[in-house]
Image (cartoon, rainbow, N blue to C red; front, side, top):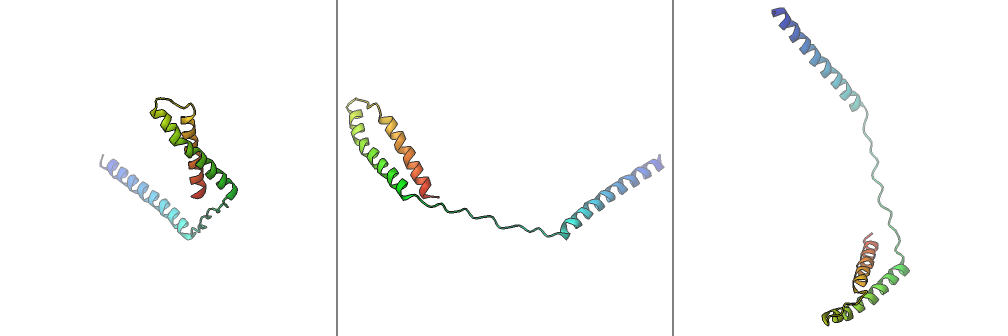
Length: 103
């Protein structure tokens, strides 16, 4: 029984040292080769289209002018049929314009 315990202890010790040697050998191989990383590519600035920007701004201004009249009708108890659609369109155009300007 005593020899069995000694044998098990030796096998465990040999197994641990063998795995440590293999791990160390792998680490040594990695350390031999330097890791060279290229710097990331900067984003290419996209040119703004002045014609498109002006069209969107003009459309946004035109739609925004209709909002006070729509609100006036809503206060009187009348719901303009395109009021919600115009507000959603204003939101969409303003989001597009903001995204183009912040690129």
